Every structure is written in C-alpha cells, then in structure tokens.
Length: 169
Length: 111
Image 1 (cartoon, chains in turn cyan, red):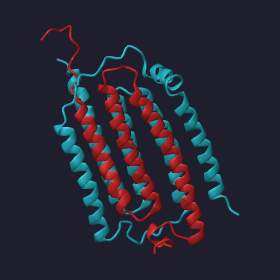
Image 2 (cartoon, chains in turn orange, blue):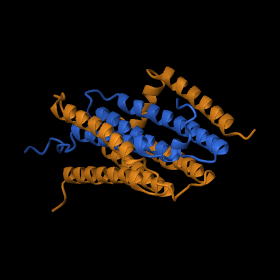
Image 3 (tube, chains in turn red, brown):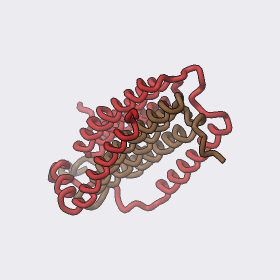
Image 4 (cartoon, chains in turn brown, green):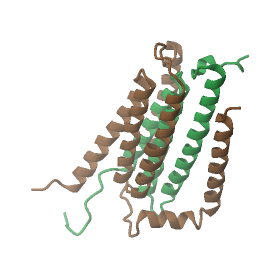
C-alpha cells in the first residue's frame, strides 16, 4: 500500500501554491518592513519548490541562489541602511488601497476567465530525455546567444549605475 | 488501466497559469498600495515570480523539448537582479537626500 505518485505531485503543488500566496498576502499585510522581507523569503522558496514540481530543477536552484541568496541580502541591507518609521502606517489611505485592489482584482479576474475558457492544445507534459541544464545551456549559446550577451551588458550597466547612484559625493 | 503507460501528470497547464496570475495580482496590490519604497520593490519581485511560474508552466506543457520558456525565465531573473540593485541604490540615494523612504513624501515632480 503506497501513496500514488500523482497524489504526491498534486499535494505538493497545492501545498506550495498556498504557501506562496500566503507569503505574498503576508508581505502586504505585515506592519514592519523586515516582516515583509521574511514573508517574501517564504514566497520565493515556495516558488522554487513549484519550479521543481513543474520540471525546472536548474531554474529552482537559480531561484534559490539569486533570489533567496542575493536579492534578499540586498533588500535586507537596504532595510538596515534606511531607518524605518514604524509608527506610520505602511499601507496607503482607504482610497488608494481600494483602487489598488480593484485594479489588481480586475486583472486577476480577466486573466482567470481567459485561462479557464481558452482551448489549450493538450495538457500531458512532454517527457524529457535530456537534463534541463544541458538543454538550457544549449539554447543559451546557440539560438539565444545575442540576448545572453545583451543580458550580461545589462548586468554590468546596472551594477555600475547602482554604484554611481548610491555613492556618497 | 495498462501499466505500461506513465502515470497521468495531475497538474494541468491551467493550474500553473492561475498560480502565476494570483502571484502577479497580489504583487500588484502591494506595488500599488504600499508606501515604503523597499516594500514596493519586494512586491515587484513577487510579480516577477508570477511571470516565472507562467513561463515555466508553458515550458512544461509545450509540445517541444527545447525549454524556451525556462530560458525566458533565466532572462527574467537577470532583469529582476538588475532591477533590485538599481532600485535599492535609488532608495538609498533618496534616503540620503530626504531622510525618508516613503514614496508619498517624494512628490517634487507632482504638478
């Protein structure tokens, strides 16, 4: 008597989807910025688990290294370097909150209706015979070599720009 | 049921797309309503993650095995890293100038 594989996959997907959404909601509702950052770690880690379930193991490792590692350290440095005024409410006034929820809710409803009513070609995934790392590397250095070089230029420009902007005169 | 077939994959394309749409919408609520510039940057990261989940779902259920959706997700992560670096540098520069990181206090360009 063993648990079927599809039950484990579905259960993992729903569990980590609920964790990711809960972390995103907690990010908005948290009163202190540091708590928002911790909720963001929950969301990013849950999305990494979802990427594993969706068959993107290399991308899940990149997600953990870049997001949970680098970007979160950067954000927490930003929080430490700018003393926070915790006595003021972080969320906008009722009009601003209502407008934001209305706009985002409209986008969510429209995209959900489109996803639910569209006719997708088929939903059985294609079996993979090669590792995702090999396939991604092959694509990056053949068909996508120009975007790859442009992305590296973008990173260099962004790093130089960040140093110039944040430098003391 | 013949046992030679692989077990059915229970997650359809729509599951991943709806998760991506939910993350995108919740991140947009945060980006539109929060007042702290660092929290707005974090909400934008949540929106990036919704797009990544969407692309990876499409790559999972595509007819081909060249994983173009995952390559697009790599580029999204690159842009997100550049975005976070420049955004936090701007936040620190604004704090040095105005001694606040609240976006409603930085309204010099408002007519």
